[in-house]
Every structure is written in C-alpha cells, then in structure tokens.
Amino acid sequence: MRRDQRGIEGLPLRLMLVALLISLALPTMISVMHETTSNVAEQKAAEMAEEIAATLEEMSSGGPGNVRTVKVPDDLPAGIAFSIGGENGSVDYSRIKWDAGGREGSRYLTGVIAITEDGKPMVISAGDSIRLECPLGTWGTVKVVKV
Image 1: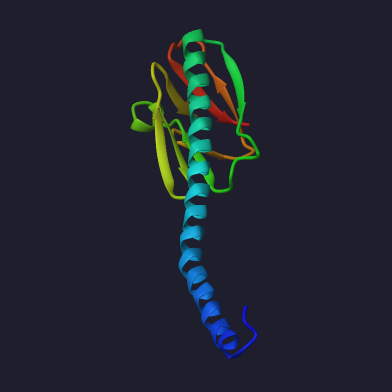
Image 2 (image 1 turned 120 degrees about the vertical axis):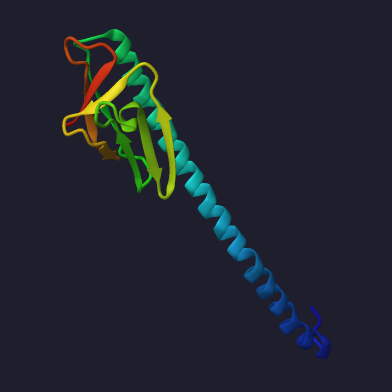
C-alpha cells in the first residue's frame, strides 16, 4: 500500500468493497448452512424410520409371540418426532411418519400393521423406547407400546 495521498484515499474504498462483498456473501452462506443442517436431520429421521419399519416387518414374518424393544437414539437432532401406528383400519396403522423440523416424510409398511393401545398414532422422539409385540393368535399385526 502506498504511504502517500493516493494510499489514504484508496483505503476507505477497499474497506467499503470488502464490507460489500461480506454483506452479499453472508446471507447466502447462512442459508446454505441452514439447508445442510435440515437435510442432515431429515436424512437421519428417514434412516431411523426405515430401521423401525424393517424391525416391524421382520417381526410380522416371525409370527405371534415375538417381542422386541427399539430405542430411538439420543443423538438425533432436536425437533425430530416419529408417529407410529394407529387404529386398526385407519391409514395410520400401516405407516411411520416423521417430522424433522418442518420437513415431513413417511414410510409405508409392507405386510404388517402397527396398532396402539388407544388407537391413536404414538409419537416418539430422541431417547424414547418402544416395545413391539406380536399378539398371540394374529399374523401380520404388531402392537406398539411406549416403554
């Protein structure tokens, strides 16, 4: 940098250009970071829903008397909730829904229905455990109970 009159006049212009570039780039960078975080949360929710669905389908093929416990990991991002099962004959009894901070998804079950005691979808989140039971005398039905 020059140490004469031109150097002194050029410094504010350079600082103003740097500030302008930062002010234009910062919102874009924040948006990208937020979008990436949301995508990661949704992907983790989808993976956990797939794991629960696979367990339900495996139990159904095993038949009456099967019992398993599934724990939702504590390290899931905040704001993720799963909705499992429902009343027999409703659309909820054959799917697992998830909400990852406003981004929703669902996984439909194949060859199994998940019922709850009260007939309403059970909502679980990070750290919760559920007990899956295949009732005696029924095939393809799994009862979901919160532990």
